[in-house]
Amino acid sequence: MSRRGLIRRVWPAALLAALAVPVTVTAQPTASAVDRSLALQRAAPPARIVSLLPSLTESVCALGGCARLVGTDRFSNSPAAVLALPKLGGLDDAQVERIVLLQPDLVLATPGARVVARLEALGVPVLALDSRNLAEVQHSLVVLARVLGTPDAAAAVSARIEREMQAAAARVPAALRGKRVYFEVDPTPHAAGAASFIGETLARLGLSNIAPAELGPFPRLNPEFVLRAQPDIVMTTRRGLDDMASRPGWSALRALQQRRHCGFEVEAYEVLVRPGPRMGEAALTLADCLARLGAMP
Image (cartoon, rainbow, N blue to C red):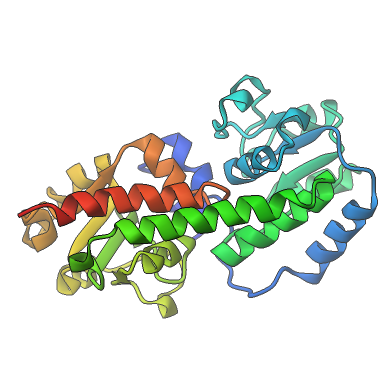
């Protein structure tokens, strides 16, 4: 199941795009993506940009290119400056005609999105970037910064992410290090596994993941798997926590019984599930909850 389909049926619409990136696993960007980015770097920096993913919208703004955005997907809501821009659908239902009318010099999307081929057939330049883990987030920042003509900006953003990651790790109580966590992204249930960017962040905070890397970034788990695993800590949306207790057998989860859980409101959860320049902020949000858990008797 794709990450776009992962939460379509149950979660608020604003979260759909937050997870809307492919889950295929490749260590490096494809040759075509590299060739396209190199060609764009040789061209004049784009003055009119459309972004079709919130994390890429945030990346453009973090790199100093926010004023060049002329439209975004419907889910891009940060920073506040992008709220007034035309909203052009999402990766699955992008409004191609409206995008073309905006005359963008560049459209940002993800590999595999259907809109990429449609736009390229119309002669619209598209840059498709993967951001499935921290290394790819940093690579995407480097590519975007070069395309924008601000190559030094990527290092500053990456350095800030790293500082915040380190600060977050320092906040985690020693008693919680090594604790096993279940991070739910869909009540079917699907988890953020150890191979996901969320799993990487949890590992940086000293936590273990009940969904091992070999299951893939966002595996669908048998409910019995979760119950047998008995995670020490459960993390999901506030709504998700309310739902868990009513599932057959899930009241037996000791993490729920002992209130060893983190239920995030939508605004905070969006930061957690967007692989972009706010990954350090996401780590700090996780660390804040862990600090509260560590203070419990």
